[in-house]
Length: 101
Picture 1 (cartoon, rainbow, N blue to C red):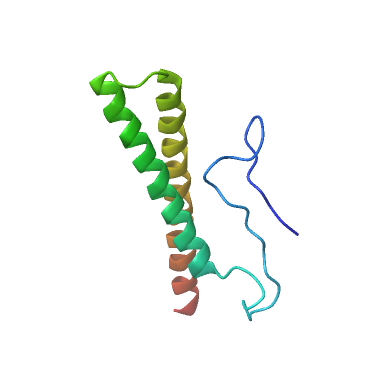
Picture 2: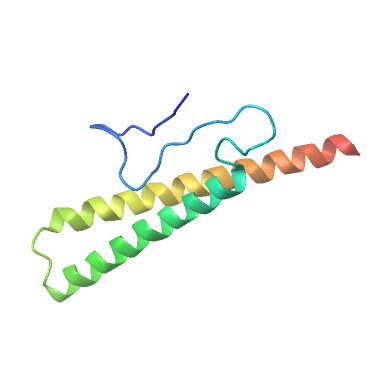
């Protein structure tokens, strides 16, 4: 089963599909550490693209302003998603630690 993030028109650019694995081996699918690393790399790429377009917009060399707005919004949404996932992971870890006491 493959899950692909879908935007209003189609797949979200810069975000790769995640294929869940069954069992604990992880050799046949994407493990959590590599999925996390890939997600952070994608986030960094989106932010770099947004920053580059912001510099072009400020210097007057950007021909289409909507390109910057799209890149900026993608980077913002990716950052919000990363923060939300991080908060949920910390909350889950804290809950697990409370269960052990």
